[in-house]
Structure formats: C-alpha cells, structure tokens
Length: 508
Image (cartoon, rainbow, N blue to C red; front, side):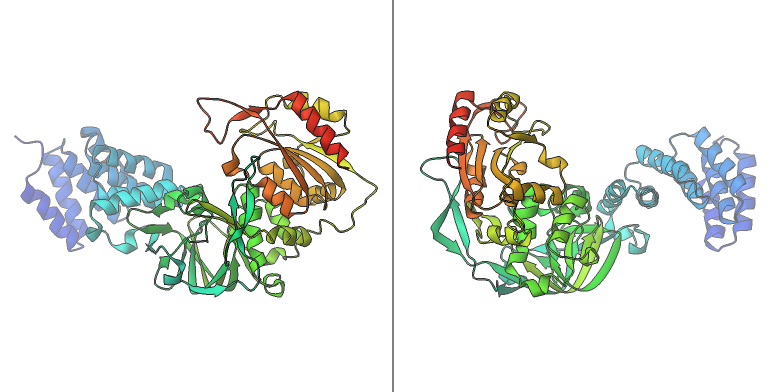
C-alpha cells in the first residue's frame, strides 16, 4: 500500500482550497493523514490549510511533521518560512527559505520570499541576488507586486549630445592636456592642446544611487566628461552600489525614491585627491551666485572631513543633498558641470585655472602670517601603498633643516588650512596627502618624493599652477609580487635627499 495519497485525493483538497472552503479542505487532510500517517504531502497540505484559517500552532506542527518525514521536501520548508513570516520571526523564515532553495535551486516562490525577508532584515545585497535569480528563472510568471525591490531599465550612449542638453561652460577656462616632460617625472601642461569645457542640463533627471549614472526622461545616460575614466568602475560608482546594478540586463535595483526641484550634481569619490580635483572643482564652471545658493548633490558616503570643504566654501549644510545606496534621486532641473580633471581616451586634461580658483575659495592666502614659516614633512607611514621605506631616516635628516613630521590625514580641513597658511616649505611623498599643497600659501617650496611613474604623477603640474615652486626627487621602487606597479613602496637615496634639501632651503 502506498504511503502517499493519490493525485485525485490531493486534487480534491486543492479544489476546496481554491473554492475558499478551507474547513472542508482541512477535513479531507485529516482523513488522508489517518489513512496515510507517514504522508509528508498530506501533512504539508494540512499545514497550509490550517495556516489559512489562522491556526498557526497546528499549522506549524503539521509542517514540521512533513519535513521530519521527508527532509528534502522543499514545499514544506517554504511553507514553514511563509508561516514564520506571518509570525514576524524573520530569522526562522529566512532559514526555511534557504533550506527550500538549497533543496531546489529553481524554486521561484522560495527565492522571492527569501528576498522579501532579506529586505526586511536590511540585507539588500542578498535580497537583490535572490530576486535576480528568481527573475532569471522565469520573469513572466512573477508579478511585479510580488517583487520586494523595484528596478529601472537604462540605456547607455557614448556621447553626451545624444542624451543631454549641452551647455558651454560660462567661464573662459580651457581643458589643457597633460603631457610627459622631456625631463622629470611629473606631468606638465601642454599649452598647444586645449579643449572647451562643457556643462550639461537635464530636465526630469534620475540619479541612480551613489553613482555618476544619471538618466534623462528616456532613461538614457552617458559618461563622457561626467566621470574621470569611463573604463574604471571605481570612477563610475561607489563600489557599495555595484550589487544594485545589473549591467548585463541594464537594470538598477532600488528601494527608495525622492525628488527635488533643482540641483547641481557633484558626485563623490573616496579618494581625497579625486574628491577635490574632480568633484568640488566642478563648481568652477558655474557662476558663484548660482552654486552658493543651490542644492549640491553628492553621495551619502561623503564623510565629515570631505563635507567640511564645501562648508568652508560657504555652502550651507542644508543645501548638501546626499544620494543613498539603492535610492533614486529625481531632479526636475539638473545641472552637471563636467569634471575639470578627466581622462579622454588615453590623454589626461585639466582646467588648470581651477587650481588658483579653488585656493581662493578656501581663503588660502588670506590672513597669512608671514612671520611664521612652517616646514612640513608629510608622512605616509600609516598608508597601505606607496610608502617611503626609509621615511624615518629622511625625516631625521629633514629635522636638521627645521621640518616637523605631520600626518595630514589626522587633521580636519580647517586645521589643514591654518597649517597651510603658515607653511613655507613642504616635503611630501607621492599620494593623496600631497593635495595639502592646495592649502599652502603662494610661493611655498614643495619637494615631492616620487616613484618613477610619470604617467600618474600630476602633482608637479598642479602645484606649479597653484603658484608653488615645485621639484621632485625620484626614488627606487621596491618590487613586490602582491602590489601593482601603482602601489609599490619605494626608497629615497639619503644623500640625494640631503642635496635637494640644501637646494630647497637656498631658494628661500
């Protein structure tokens, strides 16, 4: 004798269930359990029916019984998860749904329910993965209202003109090409190669989370001059945002939408150098009487020290609009100034007029006490990459010339500005901390300790454009199998360093 009911007997339960005659369905379930006491199907059906009438205790016992008889019965595990959801036990629900999917990876209902629970628990990344998996199995059988996380489809175009309304930047500044000099290891400006900077205007724009992907009304976007490098994902979006994008199917998954009337898009980057040179300096291309009183749109990842640069420029805190992960910010009237430092193809360009403008906005040369001549040696000892292996030895030499060791990363923007106004001489290893030159007063002397990587070193050109006297001392890289060519530590010859210090001080 079979231990399971016939299909006809199961169909009779389904018939009454569909007719919403749940009491009759329960009676048949109980008769079948008497007839087939070890039927995992009958116990599961009893659990579903008693759950429908609100008898959760009986339902749970029946469903557990079903899984005990057949631990590989995915339907019973899924139904246990659904019951736990109604009781608010999200951990138990998630465990049951994961078990069901583990038994049957193509179980769409369990995947959708699992994504719902994951969303409620705040695990959006896992929720999206489960939802994507369910949609890939059969998108036609999943109702949109059942999906816990909404999505929007987008399309990429290569050129800005086909997507946004292009505006000439109101300032006369040009983008000047950065080239390798005949001697030295810092790029220089080429006055013979210039481009016109642009702004773009979008009506009814949609900014996708913490990214530089901004849709127009037709859900199209372009990256040309809006990102530093179109081929580098790190420059297109915050890597925490990556799981919310499906670039294969051109979809963005989101949980929240907000709207504002007007705004200027700056975006954000975790690297302070890129934050200053690529994002804040975008404001150079907009008249001050506009940006000082507009909503300034950045990413939610912007930390307090980075935000303080905007505040020090006179932008009210309430005007700084942060776009969060898995959020869409709709802007009726959006202006996007282009990045002033940008890679176009294989060439780098920079609007060098941005640098003195930025220093003026920060008040670098205001209230400068000429009686104080600070000599600053910036340490990279606490950084992960591009450290000077004999930094302590070099600092001991520099101490003899009156230099103080400073960890710039530990200073607030205000503290850096105060220190920069007093700084007459600066020694800095190559890296983001070198951006401290922005805060040093005009005609300060800067010695950069550098790797022999001219193709990524822009500090010389930027420092000179900021009215600093710049020189570089090139070290010897310490090869490492685990570090890329851009991350190698390096060694500086102490004798050469001493000679450069004598030259630096003679310039005073």
